[in-house]
Each structure stands twice: as C-alpha cells, then as structure tokens.
Length: 592
Figure 1 (cartoon, helix red, strand yellow):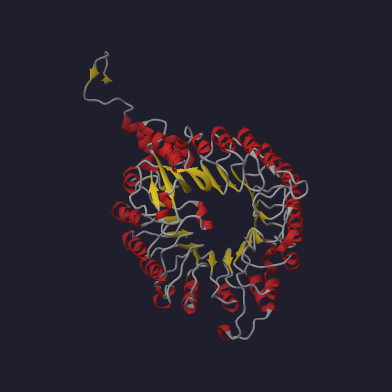
Figure 2 (cartoon, helix red, strand yellow):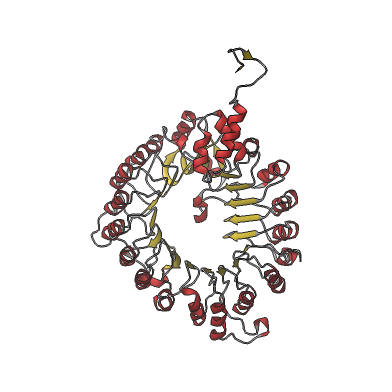
C-alpha cells in the first residue's frame, strides 16, 4: 500500500517494488548469464527468478531427449532461439545400442514448428532425423540459420536438398560423423539447391556424406560465400578440386581436405604438382585448423608446410601415417593446441609431438585396429613423452594395448591441470605390462593429483581399490566410463556413495551386480544417466530400483525382444525424466 502525507495509505497505488518490477530487473540481470549452469542455478533461487530465467533463455540444452517432453520444454522456454538436443547414450558409438532404439527428432520438430516461429539454430547429437523432419524444419522457421547434426542417422541427401533450398538465411550447415547414405536412385544434387542469392554461408561441413557432390555447384557456392570461414569436404572431392576451392576462398580459417588424393585428369588437369599445391596453401594465410586427409597420398603432405606454424588444430585421425611421415609436419607446428592422430605414428611419433608442441592442450590417439588382440603401436613410453613435453595438457584420449602404472603416475604429476583423462587399454583386464600388478595406483594418482578432473575413463586390470581412490579423491568427476574393470560390487558402491558430482556413469563388461546397483538408490535422482551392459545384473534388481524410484526411467534392453524373457539383464539404461516413461519404446526395450 502506498502512503500520502500524514501517513494515510492510498489503495489505488501499487507498492514501489512490485513483483513485476522485480522480474523486469531480474530479466535484465539474467541477460548477462551466458553459461547454462549459471542459469540453472539462478532459476532455483525463487519463483520470480524461475520465471524470469525461463523468459530470457535463448538457448535450451537438453542432454537426454527423453528427460522432458517437447511440450514441457516449450511451455517453460517460450522465447528460445536455439535448441541443443542429445539422444542415444554415448555407447551407441561402439554399437552397444541396438538400431531402432529411439531418439527420434520427429516429435520435437512437430512441437516446435507452431511454437517457435523465430527459431534460428538446432544442434542434434545421436538423434534419428528423417528427411521429412528436415523438410518440416526448413518450412517452419523463416529465420533459421544454423543446423548442426552430430552422429545422427535416418536422413539423406533429399533432406539436405530441402534445407539448402528453403533456408534462405542459412549460415551454418555442419554434418559431423553422421550416417548419410542413399541408394543410387535416391541421391539428390543437394549442393545445387542453394539459391544463387545465397551469400551468407559461414560454415559448410559435409565430410560424412558418402556420395559425390556437384563440384561446379560447390565451387560457385564457395565463390559467392565471401563470409565462409569453415569448409570441410568429403572424400569425393579430389586434391585438384580442393586446390580450386582454396584459391577461391583465401579467407578460410578451417579446412577439411577431403581425400587429399589425386585423380589423374581431375578438373581437366594432369597430376598435381606438389609445389603448385604448396603455393595455394601459402596463399591461405588465415588457416588455423586442418582436418580430413581421408585417402592421404603422402607425397602431397609437404604442401601444408606453409600453414603449419599458424595451426592451432590438426586432425589426422583418418590418415594412416608413420612417425617419419609425421615429423616434418609436426616439427613446424609449434602453436598447436589440439591434435588428433592414429596410433600408427607409434611412440616415436608421440615423442616428436612432445618435442614440438609445448602448448598442446588436447590430444587424442585413436587405434588403427581396435580389436582386442591387435598389437597396438603406442604404449607407456609415448604417454610418458607427452606428459613430459606437454605440461599444458588438459584433455587426453589414449588408446593402447600396453600400459604401466609408472607412466600414468608420471602423467598425473607432469600434467596436474588435466580435466579429461581417458585411457582405453583395449585388451581385457590387462595389468601393468612390467610389474604384472593391477593398474590401480596409476589411476589413483590421476584422481589424487589432478584436482580439476571432471571426466575419467578407466580400463585394464583394476580392483576395488582404484574405485575407492576415485571415491575419496575424485570429488569433481562428473563423467565416469568403466570397461573390463573391477572385481566386486564394492567398486560400484564406492563410486555411487563417494562421488557427489557424478552425472554420467557408463559401464561395460564388468562384474557388477544387483548389490552394487542398489547402493546408488540415494544418488540416481541426481544423475543424468547410468548405462550398464554385459555386467551381472538381474531383472529382480532392476525392478527394485524401479519400485524405489518411481520418477526414474528404468530401461532393460536386449538385442531382440525374446532377450527380455530371461532373468539376466544384458543392458540397463537409467535416466531421470520429468514426464515418465517414453511411449515409443521398441519391442526389445522393456520399461520397468
């Protein structure tokens, strides 16, 4: 109630700081919060902050498409301009999630079409996206400008053609590690569908599209897209054609080279001379990121020398390259921050990386042969070299067949700022290759010495002891991946009771059963998901979790529907959901 002179109240005047005024102030403050964790925290303060945060959130991130219904998300976030949506569990990348499991984009785009006419950006990861979904997206959002699809399936070049033709304001079309394959009679000339007036494209990535493209149309598109900064082409673009694209887009900062392979007579020219290609790279003075090299002809590798000194990112994970072939390149990459490579470079190649790349912050070493009984070309020696030569390392993914505790301990001491440590010893339950001891002490040192660690992947011969180390010292770990590890349910009990910030837990081929699973009853509501496959779970144990936590979705997954009739559980997927069990579960999924 307002007051007038003499202390009398006026009923017709609202209080000077009404709820609406406060919400307006809060909205203006929240506009400065960019990170979703900060926004999530702000929305929990009170109802006014909850409403104001929802009204000002422009990007909605949903880490599990089944955690909330499209209707609920749209009702809360009415002003969203961007959606980031994830679907299948990460172990789908290792073929552990049966085809047809779910994560369809269809219900999401159908719900968004009438609700978000101003939508500008969609990023999908591990979702099933149909050509019809892409067509509806293209027709529903006149201001749409950014589509990124990562590890998705279900669509082909007809869907891409619709996006290219109807999204007149498109600036980003990034297709990353998707399964894009058409039957010969279904292949569409999607590149030519970009309108001739299109000139605002900033990023075009189509490395995963497994069919030839209309090169003349691609070249014309590149020529008129003067703002194009990132271009990643597929293996059907020859090195001759790549050179022509580079000459027409000297402003590129990121380039995916496609095949890096010559085709005699391609583009009406004979075999390309290395010196000519080198001059083209020399003219590309803005290049800082290189990838591709899918069908690498090693004699052309020296052509990239002129840009090596400027590179901050180099991805050779598709190139079978040896240490001797790598060294002339890597010795010139002194500013490199991110490096992805196959293990074919061996320990000798990693030593060269360590010697040259003192600013390296992320390293991924992938296996050329991922089978359990492969020889493997990198070992503990390469890991030690990297730890000694790259003290700024913050993230590492390292596939190998042989490892020692001493090497992992050296990594923990030399790179204390590690945030991500993923060591994948591909052979099952392999001990320290020198002492024959479990790998407990190595991984224990990682969680003890690397205080910023948020993501950890463990493998090799491991006992309950290492999980006790993780529980006692890995208080910041949010994502934990376990393969072929542990010896009793005590391991799982340690983790679920000792890691308060754990959000994502992935376990495969480990001897954990019902007792270990039930020890996490108190924590599952605080986690995004738990995945367990090829463990020792029973239907009874999973049903107990479902009974105890009615708002948790408990999915039992088999390869076939008849797999669900047994008491043994092959795959378990737990996740929290505001809207209960999904309605599109296939026959080989039972929701308890």
